[in-house]
Image (cartoon, rainbow, N blue to C red):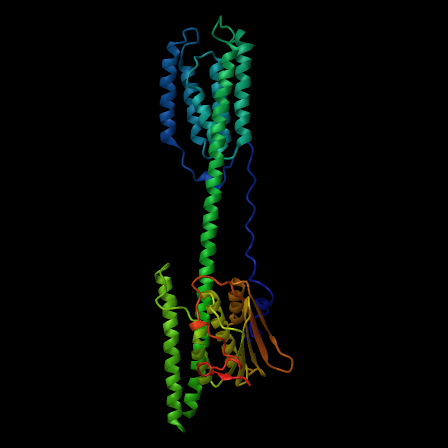
Length: 444
């Protein structure tokens, strides 16, 4: 019923798609990921200063054990400091940092200065570049440094200082290659772990957002079902009270009594939903409504001028709490729609207990009442969401010859803790021999 008044976009399509995010600018090969996030990164002053002191002091100690190498002069000091200082750019421009440190180390070794911790800045630059995602650039920088050292140590040493220098042993080259591979392997391991952590963090955020959205939709359905039904009854009874206030004050008093009862029940259910919001995770203080409260629902419909005839088939048995609540809310919303949108004063409610499903149907003879009943258009949407959450279906359509039918099929899963009827009594159908439930009027 309500979706007859809903906007066309709501009935035939989902919500509008959010605008697509603009594509990110491509990463530049020579500079690395220096976008907005990289530009906001502060230079690592403290760690770079500590590393510079370590390289200078360590090189001076290493020079005492290499008397045949060129002495550490001002040029050597400048190369060592420059190779460390360029690491200030490693967060914003990791590719520049790794190539610059490799170049400084290669010039230092080509000048014949002593071996030492000159490779440490190169290792730091490679590590940062790999972790930042610039893997090919980091491997290229290390490869250039290693090939350049091969040329200097085994061919160009004849023309480069110090004089009388001999070719380096090949075992040293193997050690340098193993050192470079180890550094790159550690950097790759850290990069993979960071990517895994980022994916896990993103998955946790997505799961938390999904749970929050599901809870928000559940609360919205509960509030809609409670308020729509109760306010519809109050609206009808208020109109009756106003019409009879002068001529039949006793009947007006009855209407006001019904308004008080309906508003009290609505406030109680709304309070229960709000308590769940204030104290998430705690058990509700009162049980969720189910089909055992169907007589109250029918009495409220009767107070609004709607007679409900009920037929129950099959053997009544325990229902899972979720199915019981969904069945109650679906019947409540269907009867509310009849009160709001139909001129019929009689509705037929059928409850069928099948071996593996609960089948519900609410029919009215129509025709539509016309006029604006104040519906939001989300009643049938909420019913479909409730049924879909249980693996069931909703069939809401006009009936040939006038009227409207809401049918639901909810699977029975037999979940633990389901609501159980006393002694497994049979249903209230015509052959059960039991009186009608509450104020329901049995169908002939």
